[in-house]
Image (cartoon, rainbow, N blue to C red; front, side):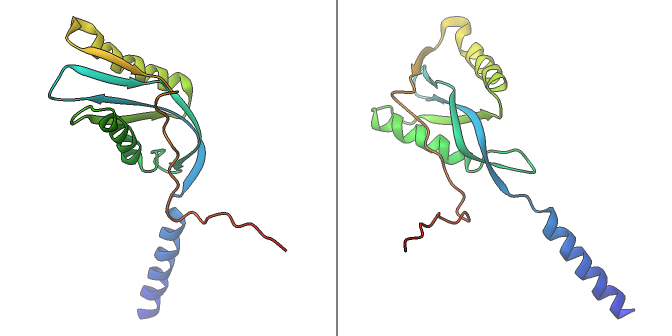
Length: 142
């Protein structure tokens, strides 16, 4: 009876190890949005194609998405914008990214209550974030 319990536990551990997802490098399309509760100006970045982003293979969620938002936050603070609240949205294809982008922009276009500013890719560009567990490539010199 004890042996059956140990075998069952061992099998469950092996199965659970195989279920874990991994971050896979792939192309994503992302954009940023920033607003401040202190004024009516909102900021949109252009939709940017990033070939070296990491996405969780199981959940299809962008690795370290909050850090992409911090990249936009830090850029805006450096430009003198006080207390921006930033988000980063992404999709695995351009069409879905454009759909999300237009839906969010539509919320802020109506009513004329907001001053909408667009950040060109030449002004702000997201930088890829690698998972910490990814080994750095090594060069072999002889």
